[in-house]
Amino acid sequence: MKNPLVSVVIPCYNQGKYLTETVQSVLASRYRPLEVLIVNDGSTDDSLEIALHLKEKHEELTVIEQVNGGVAKARNTGIKAAKGEIILPLDGDDKISADYIGAAVGLLGDRPEVKVVYCKAVKFSEAGQKPWKLKPFSLRALARDNMIFVAALFRKADAIAVGGFSEDMHMGREDWEFWIKMLKNGGEVVQLPFVGFYYRMTPDSKRKKTGTGRKKRERIDYLNRKHADFFQQQLNGPLRFQRSWSRVYNTLLGWMGKI
Image (cartoon, rainbow, N blue to C red; front, side, top):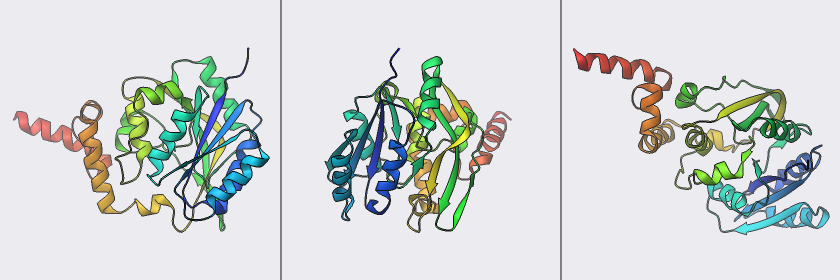
C-alpha cells in the first residue's frame, strides 16, 4: 500500500533569515512522498528570493505568492493548493525532527477516529533550548487553553470541512480556535511520545506580541461569540478572563440563579 502524500504548508512573512533551515528540516524527513508549499505572505525582506532559490534546488517545493493577508490566510492558501490528503502547517522559522511525519502518518492511517496528531516539543533560541511543557489534551482543557501547537498533522478534508483557519482572527492564537472547531463535535487527539517539533523564540515572536491583556480580552470575546455552544458544554458558560476559573465561576453563577 502506497504512503499518502503529505503536504507541508509553510507560511512565511519576513522569515528569510530562518527559511532555509526550516525547509531543510522538512526535507530531512525519513517520510516520503512529501510536497512543501512555501506561501510568501507579502514579505518585504528576502524571503521570496530565498524561497525561489530553494525551489530551484528541490523539486518537492512549490512557492506561492500572495499580498500580505496574515498567517491564517497564508495557511489556508497552502491548504487549498495542497495535493496531499494530510497537512502539516509549519511556520517559516520553526523545525521538525526527521521521524515526526512518518510516525504521525502511520497513526492517522491506523486509526481513522484520530483527527489530530502532534508530539512533544522544545522551545529554542540562540541562548539554548528548553522543553515546552504542554498540558495534557482534553476537550475541557482545550476550552480553557490551547495545548496543541499549530505544527500538528491532520487530514485536509477535516480542515476544509471546518472552513480552515479563521482569517478574521487578528488577535493571535488562531490555531487554538482551529482546533476547537475541528474537535468540538468529535475526533480523537494523540500526542506522540517524543520531541518532534522545535519552536523558535525570537525577539519579535508572535506569541509575545499577542500575549497582552488587551489581546487576551479580544481573543476571549471572539471565541465566546463563535463557540458559545462549546464553552457552554465544557465550562457551563462562557470562557472568562481568568480562564482556569471559568467552569467554577459559571457553575457558581448557575447555582445562585436557582436560589
